[in-house]
Image (cartoon, rainbow, N blue to C red; front, side, top):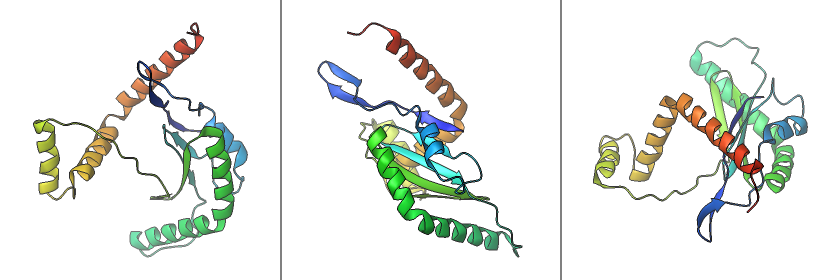
Length: 190
């Protein structure tokens, strides 16, 4: 089972930033694999975890028909994903409710079929930051060029771009953070 980053929550406490009381979600991929119906996906779903949300994306069985072109195939894939979403809604809600209780994070679902991937009911979390003029000018250029409608959307676009182009570096960083967390957990309690 492929898993995404399992970030750890941080909260503001006495003396500055520290680990929040979020339960570990290191076993989320395994928990979902044991909880999901076998017939839903062709393999183990991808489970991505951060401080606020768990996103689970599974691959649906291939379509069997012939299609005139890519647009028709894409429409059929989207239709099949939509049908799966409707047919599994009640059971997905119950599984999400259990997972939200266990991991104290919202659960969002997605499905992939061929080249089509759709996510349902993901959350959007506001992130506040202070930017100096050179960074604001970058965002304003993206807005002025029509790449984004607002500074907020431009910042989200920039974060996605960095994520796409720095994935191996980010993976290394996540591994290093995981090692630090392991070492910290083996240390003495304060």
